[in-house]
Length: 253
Image (cartoon, rainbow, N blue to C red; front, side):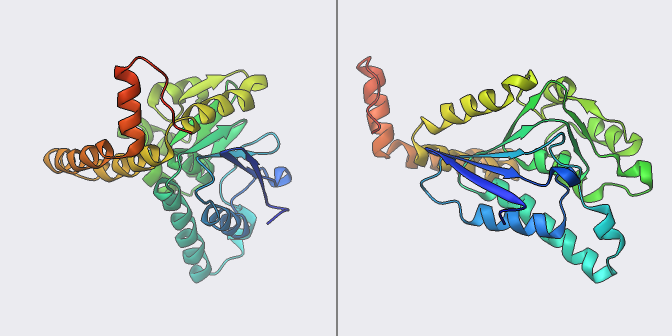
């Protein structure tokens, strides 16, 4: 894994870094498997995951040279493993933040859209531009239309046009846009802010957030009411409410 992906644990924050800048961190089958393995090793010591990348680009999508040499069953396996990876991210108990510089295109844009949050350098660009080479970005579309309005997604998919980081923030693909020199620090600030909250509460909240997205309104209210009841009984919540009422900082150590 070391030549594809590196892991650095920074207290309660784990940074996973795509480390193939020569290929613009393309999602080859090997890179996908490395990411799946790395996410599977995340344990309760980690409260937040940052997904970053070396080099000029965050991720240029699938490795087209590799795909070109694949038989149909091999392509099916590639897309199956990629779909598994993209679904692992929202299923992970810890929030995952994409730290994006350069371009995030096709499956790279899909990777950003699959993350819970994203911080982008002001020069970053996002695209699902496969249509420009005759390959519609059907699988990246799944994550994209769950992150931004469908009409905006369809325009990107059918024109192949890139959007800026600022436009990505307007559409909801990106949370924060900062100068490139501040990208790592700003991503870490966001991660630290989340990591300072009770981890059990964050994990419960993330699961409820994603579960209710697939439910009707009435079912979502019923399910989240149960979450609120369970949450109220947590020791961290009892302490937090008590601290608020007593006008003191909570003791969550």
